[in-house]
Amino acid sequence: MANKEIKIPKVTRVEVIDETGRAYTKWNVKVEAQLQDNERTLKIFVYKKDD
Figure 1 (spheres, rainbow, N blue to C red):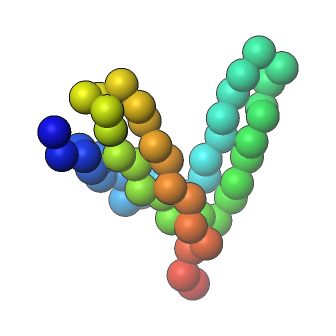
Figure 2 (spheres, one colour; figure 1 turned 180 degrees about the vertical axis):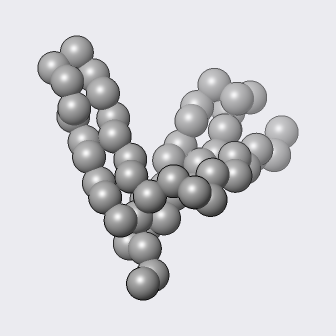
């Protein structure tokens, strides 16, 4: 099965929340996402945003 790309062009901030709170925060970024492994794995790709 091919990877399923998720379009999220407006997103410029990424936050990952775990049991301790904000585990990861990144601002002013470009974000791409893919569902892989029969849609059981979500991969988030975070890149520096071009100004």
